Structures are given as structure tokens and as C-alpha cells.
Length: 199
Image 1 (spheres, rainbow, N blue to C red):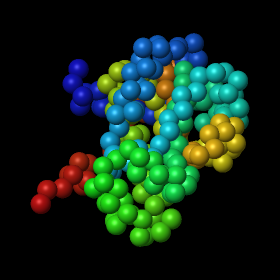
Image 2 (cartoon, one colour):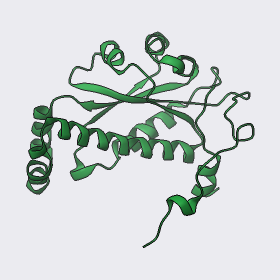
Image 3 (cartoon, rainbow, N blue to C red):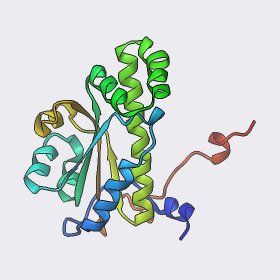
């Protein structure tokens, strides 16, 4: 099956099979794929936390609004975090990136102030979300991207002090009675000619 066909089949799962588990080999592959995600100037201002301990998933589920059931019943929850402190981020790129990349940050991003820096770093994390969802589609893993979580409570529970949560993704195997399956709820997208333009 080619990638287009896989993306046609991919959808956001609303109900998981709680007995199904993603294999350790596939989890290791997803971790490596996320580590290879692109980011502007190779900035990598992120952490990806793979959660599969039931007691921790239950704590996070309680602060996931209407996504509670998905978190509990999925195989894994992946939490996407961004660096909190621009000064820590600048130290990281100074230690790991070539001078040209660091200069780009100092001249093109930093002068716009802390809010703009944090927004720019957050955009890099969202690039990795696209990579993960595409990888899951290719690997036959079902997924649900979620912004509907209490990010400050995730931070309190996870205690990853230098980072803060932006969003999370559940992965696993869909339940047979998942109401969002395209056979039950067909995918709806704007017509391609409305969003794909040529000039």
C-alpha cells in the first residue's frame, strides 16, 4: 500500500482496544523517528515523553478533559514538550549547532522578544507531530492528537522541570466499535482545489 492510500485510511481514533499493545520494537522505531524530526536550524527545542505505566496514564487521564478514556485505553501516551526558558535553549544551541545556525537565531528570532521566541520554539514541536502521525499511518498504528488536556497539570505530574507540555498523542489499536472509523463516519475535507493552489 502506498503512502497516499495509507493517509486515506488514517483517521483520529476516538475509542481504543484496551487489550492491544504496540510492540517494543515499534515503540523503539517511533522514538528514533521522532528524534529525526526536522526543525528550523536543527534547533530541537523538545522532549517527547512516552508514557505506558498504567498508574501514570491514569493520573494524566484525569486531567485530559474528554480525552480521559482514550488515554487510559490506548497502548501509549506520547507527551510533546517544549523548553521553558529561552536562555536554556540558547545555551543548548550554542553547544550543539554551528555558528551560522546560532547567528540565525540571534539575528532573526531573538530580537522579537520572549513571546516570539516561545512561539517559534512551539512551531518546531508541531513539525514533529506531523512526522509522528505520518509514521503511525505508515506503520499501521492508530493515533489521536490531543490539545484537549490540562497542560499545566501534565507538567505537575510529569515533573520535567525545564520543559512544558504543548499537546499529547495517544497511540494503539482502534476498537472495532470506534464511531469515528471512516466506514461509520466518512472523512470530510475541503475540496482540494480550494486549498491546493498553483501560481
